[in-house]
Image (cartoon, rainbow, N blue to C red; front, side):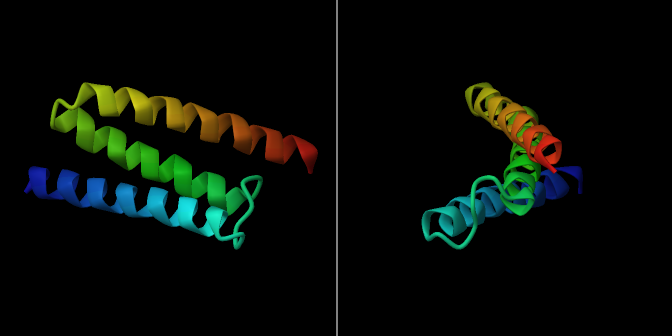
Length: 81
C-alpha cells in the first residue's frame, strides 16, 4: 500500500512538472507566477519522495535542487508584492 502511494506521488509530481513546463513554454504561464513555482515545488517534492523510496539518488538530487530554485523564486515573488 505504501509503495502504491509513493508511485502515485511520483506520477503526480512528474505530471505537475511537465504541465508547468508546457504552460510556461507555450506562454500561458509566466515563470514568475506563483502557480508556476508551486507546480514546480510540489512536483519536485513528490518526485523526491518517489526517488528516495526507489533509491534513485541522482534524480533525487536534481529534484532537491529544483525545489530550492522554486523556494527562492517564491520568496522573490512575495518580496516584490
